[in-house]
Length: 254
Ligand SMILES: NC(=O)c1ccc[n+]([C@@H]2O[C@H](COP(=O)([O-])OP(=O)(O)OC[C@H]3O[C@@H](n4cnc5c(N)ncnc54)[C@H](OP(=O)(O)O)[C@@H]3O)[C@@H](O)[C@H]2O)c1
Image 1 (cartoon, rainbow, N blue to C red):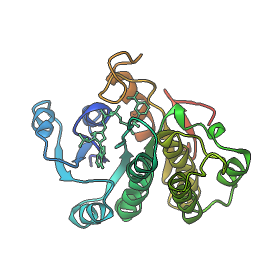
Image 2 (cartoon, rainbow, N blue to C red):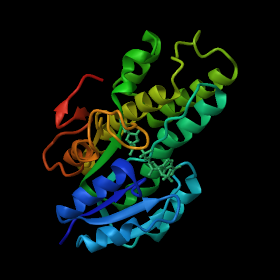
Image 3 (cartoon, rainbow, N blue to C red):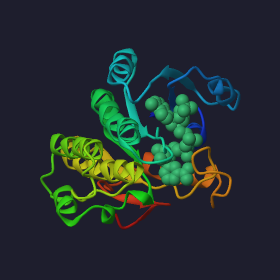
């Protein structure tokens, strides 16, 4: 039986290329995107079995609807959707976290019952999400072995509230919503890895490198194939690797 992989933000950039590479490895692809897209047609023409669903990761109702509509279990979930906004203020903090952190959290929560035991969950992160960007007390809290999803979500909400109140720097946060959102999903990968160990579901965070997409820009170092391969490595794992942060299949310091 073919394995099935669901990818968020599969309509362009790294997400689309992850769908293509997994499809060519024989996976059935559940491609999700927030707006209608015809990329599924092109992938089908390459011989890939594909189904499309709408999913706006920033809207928890959208994730719940997707969960209700899914007809078969999935072996892999790739939380790829992400935004990187210009500037830094409360609006940027709120929107960035809503997509990059809370989006991955809500989608994973909604889809967990559909992920087969022994499957893979990938959080597409970034080298910019290094824990070193946080003050020591926040670092210690996020690295605690008993960190819970609820405590992590509260901390991420604190960042938004602190930016709104003009006290984020004094409370130990950097002026980078994107960086904080990716620190958050790296921590989330560790929490889920621990929680889902009894189901043998691996959860890893991956950095694709600096990639030539709409987000990465034309001057980026890598083409989309190379960046996507870094993600696909974690999407198809069959060993005991879980709770780590990787680039190109190698552990990188978080
Ligand atoms: N490119 C890089 O250098 C780089 C480096 C490190 C990490 N990353 C990460 O890699 C991932 C993919 O980035 P990319 O470079 O492929 O960027 P991209 O070309 O800008 O694509 C971003 C994808 O995310 C989707 N998305 C954004 N908001 C969404 C929402 N609310 N609901 C559903 N989908 C949403 C976009 O959909 P729409 O078409 O609807 O906007 C698009 O499919 C991101 O998580 C990013 O942070 C990229």
